[in-house]
Amino acid sequence: MSMKKMLLFLVSIFFSVSVCAEEVSPTFNVEIERKVSYIDIEGEMYYDCVVAIRASSATVSVVSVQIKDKNGKRIYVRKFKGSYLYIFSSGQIQIGKPRFDKVVIYSRPYGSYVGKIREKEGVY
Image 1 (tube, rainbow, N blue to C red):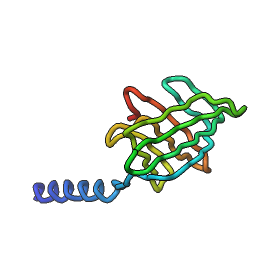
Image 2 (tube, helix red, strand yellow; image 1 turned 180 degrees about the vertical axis):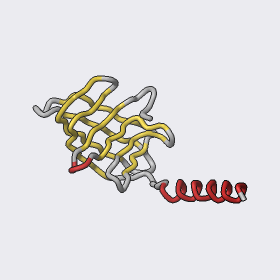
Image 3 (cartoon, helix red, strand yellow; image 1 turned 180 degrees about the horizontal axis):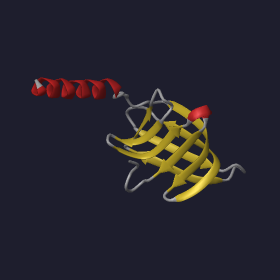
């Protein structure tokens, strides 16, 4: 009997993980602007910023990211070539290649956002 219970337990875990996993496709030809409470850029923290993201067409696959502080001063400008923009139903935004995200903007409760940028080692 314990073997049947163990098998049932493993099958239920596999099923719950596969149901919870959200599959998302890259998004093209879109511009997004998000106000973030704070963003961590390569270990430096910036507060009350605006992140502007522009994804090009599917044939070019370039994502531009521009971050301005609360005074309108540009603090970060990059074009990620060969990278894709992913937008999840939870509000989370990811920029990178499959299984290697360089920019992640997390949705927080009450409509706020926070972000993290790691160009070299990626965001995990």
